[in-house]
Image 1: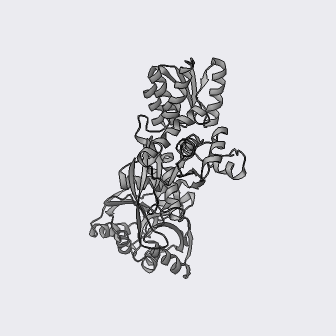
Image 2: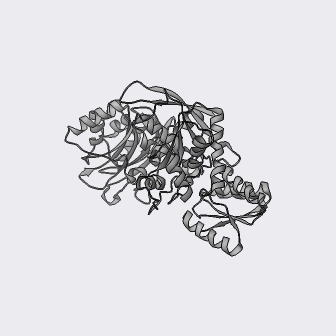
Image 3: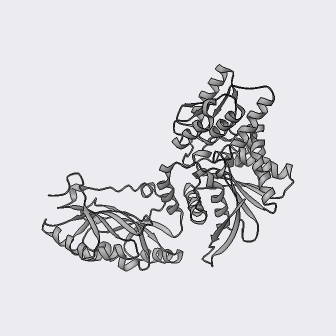
Length: 486
C-alpha cells in the first residue's frame, strides 16, 4: 500500500490535509487487477481437467488477464474485443498472450463483442471466462481486499470502482465474510454507466439504454447477476461521480505522485474526494483508502483528461458574455470586472456585426469567482455560465468570415503570467478589432494564441505589427484558407 496526500477546503475554511491509502493495482504485470480473477478461473478449470479452448470478451484489462493466464498455464484462448478498444490494450493482449492467444475485434460495444464470443463458444465447445459475473473470477478479485487488510488493517472506509461489479463484490465479501472486518466498502460508478447503483435503487437489475464510454474499463450496461446480489448484501453504499471528477482525480495523482491511471482506474479516488467534499467521510479523522484499478492509459486521451479535469475545478469557471462588437469592448469588460482573475481560456469567433459573444475561462479563488458572479450579475452585461456545456469542452468556436474586413491571423506567443494577455489587448484595442480568438492555457511558461484581427483598411495592419513588436511578443502570420489579403 502507498499513501496519497489530499487537501480539502470545505465552506471556504482553511485547507485540511489528510493521508489516504492507495492500493496500486496499476503497477501489476498487466497494469490492472484483472489478472487475479482470470487466473483463478482458468486455473480452477485446468485443475478440473478442462484444458480449453477458452474464450473471453473484454474491452481491455480482462483480456490482458486472460492472455497472461493462458500463457502462464499454457492453454489456448480466443479473446473478443470491441473495435473501439484502445490500441494500447489491444497490443498488450497480444504481447502477454503470445502464441496462446488469438484476438478478434468485433462490434462497437462490449455487448456486441460478447454476443460474437458466445456464438464462438457454442461452435467450438469453448469454456467462457467471464469478466466479472462468475464465482471463481470474483474470488480471484477478492484477494485485493485481503492484501489491503494485511497492509492497512485499520482502514475504515474503502472506495471501490464498479463496472460489472466483480472487484466490488469480491472485496466487500472478503472484508465481511472472510475477515469479519468492519470497514465500510463504498462502490463508485460514473454517471452514464451506473447500472449497479440503478439496480440497487430499484431493487432489481437495470439495463442502461446507453452507456457512457469515456471510462472504458467500467463501461458496462448491466451489472452481473451474481455481482449484483453480492453488492446488494455487502456494500455499505454506492455513489456516482462525473467524468470530469474522475479526470480531476487523475490530475491529483499526477501532481502528488507523478502517477497517471486510466480513467476507470481513478473512479474510486474521485468518489473519495467527492465524499470528503460533501462531508460524508473525513480522511483526516478516519482511515480511508481506494484502489487504483488500472494504468493502461491511451496516450491520445491525455488532452481530454486535462480539459475535463479543468472543468471539474471550482477555481475554474467558464462564461459566455454578450458585449458590443467594437474596438475596446472586451478590454473594458476585463478592466471592470476581472481584477485579480486570470484568463485561462478564450474562445471567440465573429458571428454578428453588432454583438460579440466570447467565451472566457476564468481562474481564481472561490471567493474571487463568487464576487465576480455577483458583480457581473448586477451589471447590464449579459452573461451565461457554460462550464459544463459540451461546446465549451470541445472548443466549438463558430466563425463568420464573410463578416470580416481585411483580416490577418497571427499565432502569438506571450509570457504566461497574469495580465500579459490583457496588456496586449489594451495596446491593440484602438488599432484593430478582434474577430477571432483561440487561447487555452497549457500550463507552460509561454502562452500561445491564434488571433484574428480586422481593419477598416489594409494600411492599418502595419500599425498592429509595430505595436506587437514593441511588446516584444513573438508572432507569425497564419494562412487561414484565403481569408488573408496579400
